[in-house]
Length: 186
Image (cartoon, rainbow, N blue to C red; front, top):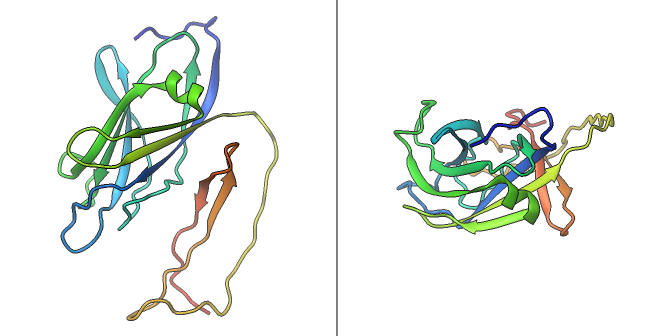
């Protein structure tokens, strides 16, 4: 792959990833998916980013954005590999692969919303949304709390969290932030 030069026009883009209808690899629960993103560098795949791991979900909307520099007129080959995380190790070699997609960043950016069937062992679809980043200085500060929340679990405490989404140009929504689970109920 050619590397960008000082004169190569480029743009910062953010990719957000969702999957639908993933394979159910766990015996007593649903799969715990994570997406690992690789870029081909001189004929070798190098890991460049990971989403968060979402437990027990076959239709995850990952909140972790993947930020990249899209360089025009240069092929930037990417591999998106979806795994079912079964342990706490950082390596993916001991986790089940649910499928993968190999494509070019240019195809994703030009499509805006890029939806493809995963190849390989598993089943399912991966949806990748690309958004060009502007350098805005707008900051939002939220203060929130939940009072009188229903106890939804049969045994133990509920696991409440907040999820913030933004509307895309096509009318769909993308998760931009998911809080951690709060273990105290008032």
